[in-house]
Every structure is written in structure tokens, then in C-alpha cells.
Length: 100
Image (cartoon, rainbow, N blue to C red; front, side, top):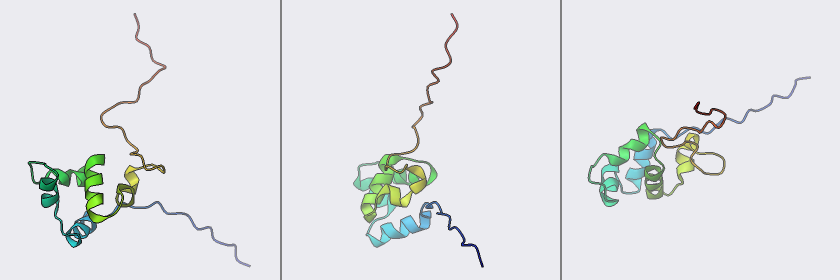
């Protein structure tokens, strides 16, 4: 008799940037057009979403293709849909006190 194999739930992977660009193209957008449409002066502004987490940019791209940012970049969000990172803020260490 064989033991039943447990199936491990694989973590969702982020979309490949080529897939995001293709979805934008199907929706009639390019990153350049989307950047200008939202008032950014530099045409490559929204390309930042591929290099680093940026919740606002992720939201703009996701809305353009009819998905949520959590669907496209699941590694960047927690199970409640909130970004799972802080932007330039270090966690406060309450156990360390300054010596007088």
C-alpha cells in the first residue's frame, strides 16, 4: 500500500515582466504611455515596478490591465493585501536605550 503524498502549496510567483508588458499591450497601453497618462514627465518612470517595490506604480499598472497588484506581484503583499515592506523605515528597536 502506498502512502498518500502530501501536496505542498506552492507560493505564488510574481508575473514575469514580459507577461506584464504583454498584458499592457493587449489592453492598449505601454509603460511609456501609462507614465505620461498619469502625469509623470519621464517616460520610464513606471519601469521602476520591475526593479523595486513601489505600491503606487504597481497599482497603476495593475489597474491598466484589470488585475490587482497582489495578483501580479504576490511576493510584495501579505495575505491581507497590504504591502509587506516598509519604505525606507527601519524597525524601531524598543529594547535598546541611549546611554546618558
